[in-house]
Each structure stands twice: as C-alpha cells, then as structure tokens.
Length: 144
Image 1 (tube, rainbow, N blue to C red):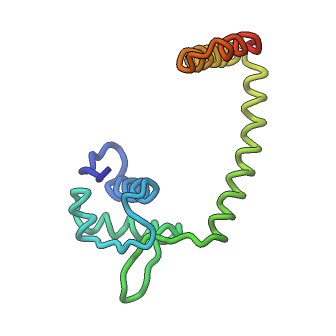
Image 2 (cartoon, helix red, strand yellow):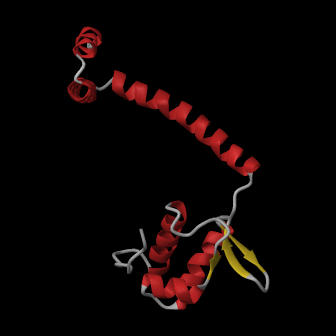
Image 3 (tube, rainbow, N blue to C red):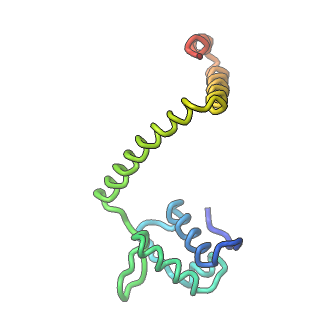
C-alpha cells in the first residue's frame, strides 16, 4: 500500500514524517537496502525536504536507516545475528508480559468474563465453519 499525504494533528511535522517513514519501513513500503531520496520522500508525504531530512537523521540515530558518506541513506538491512538478537529480546518480553496478563486476568472478574465470552464466540465459529459434528461435540465437552 503506497503512503498518502500527511495529515498533521498535534505532532510536529518532523514527528509526523518520522512516524510515516518508520511505518513505511515496517510495512515494507520502503524495503531493506532501498536508497532513500529526500525529494521523492517529500513528494510522497506532501512536505518540504527539511522535515524529511530531520526525520531521516533521527532514524539514522536509531539505526533504522544507514547513512553512507557521498552515497546517501538506505533502509538498514538486518544481518542474521541482528535478527536473532531481536527475536531473543521479543521472546523475553513475551515471557514477562504473559505473566502480567495472567496476573491481570486472575484478579479481574470483568476481564475474565470478557475472555470467557470471547472463547465461546471463537468455539462457535470453529464448530460452525468446520461442519463437523464430532468436533462440535468435542468443543462442547472441553468448554468450561
């Protein structure tokens, strides 16, 4: 999906451009290794080159973009080692927050009821889509 013009709210224009470029990198609109040209980006986002340059500089400090002297800026390409580190960090965060979610659910009756309703809805959909009477009976047996 191509990016459209920026609609500026309470953020500064640089913040808005920064977020859009970051979103386009994460969404693979801007690809790893792709050269970034300020004129093209300013046209894409409907802004002057100055906020684009400032946003790109901020992304460089975060190592999202690489700056090559006399060559320009490119979207950072992650090495296998960097990708492994990112997945390790994500795994640690998931483990930590899983405990937090369990604690929240255990102490919040309203949240428990919402989750129970959610599970019921999902089981009904699975049984309906499968058109499998045995599966439907099994799901009814295991449902708490």
